[in-house]
Image 1 (tube, rainbow, N blue to C red):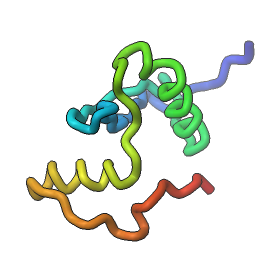
Image 2 (cartoon, rainbow, N blue to C red):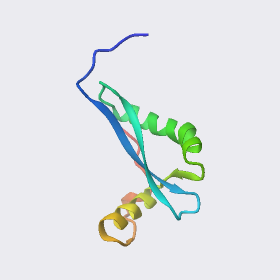
Image 3 (cartoon, rainbow, N blue to C red):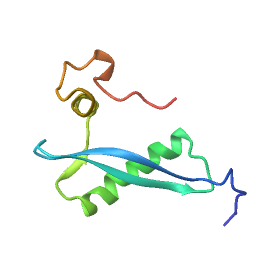
Length: 97
């Protein structure tokens, strides 16, 4: 095992929006991304994938990650109290480049 020098005095985490299979309940899961390291987009994507496949079914059975459209609805509900039509750009997630 190779130890890396820390990038900085940080401990990073990301909040991921989840929804019940029936679409009735929404929630937020906090995922740790590491201690002393800045997370790259590839690290974040891999950690979310691992969370979806391994952690989410065990920690919150009956929940899944929100789709892009559901995430837009969540943002609208939180900010305006109602939903709106989804912008075309929000039809799917964009790949990390």
